[in-house]
Structures are given as C-alpha cells and as structure tokens.
Length: 244
Image: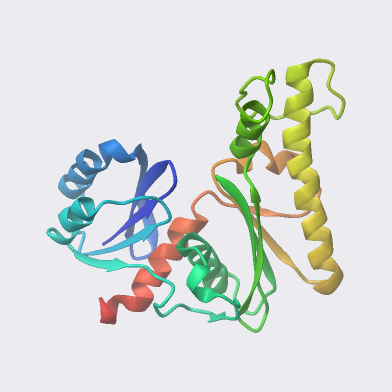
C-alpha cells in the first residue's frame, strides 16, 4: 500500500492507494496532521511506501515523524518523472503541477492534454501527444480573487465562492460573485480556445477544490476528477520505488 501526503497552502491531504486504487482520502489542517497520520497508520498497517509533496510549509519534525514509520520519497523537481519536461526553469515548477502532468501522461498517453487545476491558484498545464510538457499558466484562484477585492478596497466585503447563473448583478454581493466566477469561467474558456487553435484534438481535465463552482458552466467537453493530483503522486511513487 502507498500513502500519499500532499501538503498544500492551507490543507494537508492524505490518501491511501492499493494497487493504484484509491481506498482512503482525508484532508486536514496542518495542526491536525500528526493525529490524522496516526489514524491512517492504525487503519492501514500494510502501508510501506510514502510520497510527500509539499507546496506549503512542512516542518522537519513532521517529516521526521513520517520517516520514522515508513520508507519516504520526498518529491522534488530533480526526480524521475513519466514525461519529458521542457519547462525553461524546471527548478521553479511546483511539485503539484509535476504530479498533475504525471497523471495526464499516464492516463492519457499519446494525447494533447490541458490540465486545469482550480485550487488556491488556477493553473494550466499542457502536455502534448509526444509526452512533452510545454508549460502553461498560473492565475489567482477563486478565493484569492475574493480576498483581493476585500483587502484592496475599503468597503467590499469578504465573500465565499458560490455558483452563479446570471451575468448582471443587482447588488454589490451578486456583482462580486459574477465578477469572480464568471471572470474565471471566461478566462478558462479563453485559454481552452487558444489551445484548441493550435491543437485541434485536445483532452481537457478539470480538477481542484473549486472545480465544482465552474464545471457546470463550462461549454467545452471536460473530464472532471477530484483525485487527479493524488493519482499523479501515486504514479510518481510507483515510478520511483526502486530509488526510494
């Protein structure tokens, strides 16, 4: 069994895979990580290998606790991956994006794939049918857009994301929701259109915690999956087990 630990900017996700099948998944705040790790260790005593992917702060103490229990692989940009990385600055490519592209490379081999991850940021990552990662884009996520409206103005409130059907707001709050959600949707549709201009056959993946606010309003044919990043990390762990 494999344990996947994905350390994000706000939450830590833990997932257990058995023969590439997801058997368990849980998110927690960083302060609760060690207690959740204990729960997982007791519930799944057959775990042997662990991959840690971190884009947020993860203490040496927490990492040492994992290493005391398991054989641990800490993902970096230097590690072997199942695709050719043509990014101009590979040392700056986030491990979360590496995991997403790895999942695309394994699950959609020999296809042009655009992975859109709607999380803290909205990221766009493209891998072509020759298994070459060419890059993508990073823009503010939904919650980041709401926070910017609140923090950088004197009177706009801090709102939580919500789905919207209209395109014209009749109050400050509805105008903000439309501006953030419809703005993100138009951005995504614009990126998809640009990629389709160059790659007629294009597979589109939408994932991330805020994907549910966007999916139903997108006009393109899209594969939606909530576990794409975790699956990518599991593929990378399997790919690197001989070197762990």
